[in-house]
Length: 137
Image 1 (tube, one colour):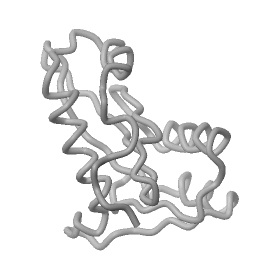
Image 2 (tube, helix red, strand yellow; image 1 turned 180 degrees about the vertical axis):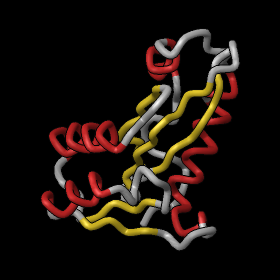
Image 3 (cartoon, one colour; image 1 turned 60 degrees about the vertical axis):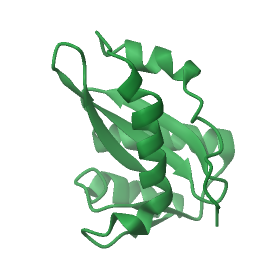
């Protein structure tokens, strides 16, 4: 799970939350909004769990969205471990970093979005939502 940032055509910044299944190298969710607080992260994870089942653990970096009490409390109650990568070591989350690059080059970098509603509606044309081309573990 990781965040990315981009801009609309008018210069306003927006963020994406990208959730990837490391085992299957499958994109499970991309949430898009101006702000993605921990409550939104938890809601997205609950939707994925309802659809795919509960993971044993979730690998994340040390960003503020992941070290908040809200996400940690949710993970503990759900019986899901949070595996934090070492600061400054994005290679420890290599699958999602590679996925992020693909999201940027195959989707975000190809379009100029005028409103925050456009990126989610445009997701259906992005071929990366599915298995990535990495050897998976």
